[in-house]
Length: 353
Image (cartoon, rainbow, N blue to C red; front, side, top):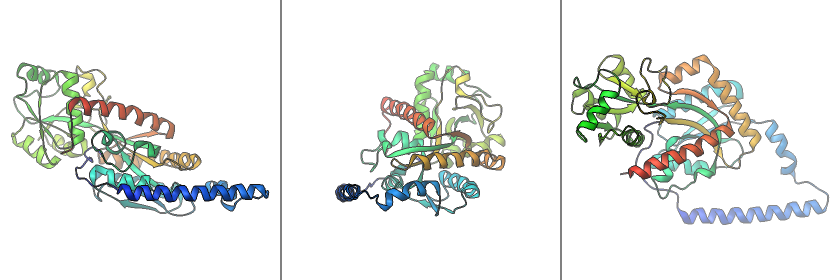
C-alpha cells in the first residue's frame, strides 16, 4: 500500500543462502544425470511426464499468497478482498501468510525463496518492487526474482490543507506562495511514499516547501487539522473522511488523471505541473521460475475477479483504484517505475531512518 514502506531491518543470513544455493546446485546436477541416463534408455522421468498435466490441472490444491505486511494493514485488507473473489473461480482455498518487517523485505525474501510451482504468490507494491532497492542495502531478494502476474490497483496520494489562509482549492496560489516565501510552508509526510511524492512535486512545480516527517497518518493529519502544520500529503484512504466532513480541503490528487474516489479534485498534472504522476500501487507477483502458463492463468482469474462490480466498489472504499494489467504489461510497468522511483529517491537523497 501507499504507506506500506515501514522501517526496520534484518534480512536473511547470507551463509544460509549460500548453503541453500550449493544444495540446490547439487540437486540440479543429480537431476541432470538422471535425465541423461533415462534418455539413453529411451525413457522419460516421471516429473517430465507429469509437468504439462500439472499445469493443465492447476490449481489442484490450496494457494498461498504472502503479504509482506502486518494483518490489518491496507495491503492485507486488499489481498483478502481479492482472494475472496478468486476462490469463486479457482475453486480452491487461498491462504494469506503475513510476513511483515523491514519495509516489506522480509516477506518478499521469503516469497523469492519459495517453490516456483504455481502455488505461492506475493502481494507486491511500489515499495517492494520499485523503491526498496534504492533504500535498503540488504534486502534478501532482487526485483528480478519475481515475475509479474497482474496489476490490482493504484493508490493515489492527496495534497490537503485546513489552513484558512491557503487557497480554497487548487495549487496555483499554493505554488506562488511557496516561491514567494521559500521553506516557510510545512508539509506533513507520514511515509516514505509521501516523501517521494513530496520530493517530486517540489522539484517539478519548483515550489520550495518544507517536509516534516511523521510516524503515521493519524499524527500528520491531526496536526494538519489542528493547524500545527498547514499541509499534508497522504493517502486517499487516510484523508477522504476528513475531506468529506470539511475538516480538510483536497487541493490535488497525485495520479495522472482525476479519480472517482475524490470527485471534483483535479490532479497535479492539470494544475501547472504537466505529466505529474506519482502513486502507490499493489500487484500480484510470483517467483521468477513459475510456469508461464500458470502465471497467465492466475492473471486471467484476477482480471475476472476485478470485473465484479461489488469487488471494484469495495476496493475503492479502501482507497484503491482498480487497474488490471496482464503479466507482460505489468513487467514493463515495473521496469519503468523502478527507474522513476530510483531517480526521485537518489536525487532527493531520501533515506530510511
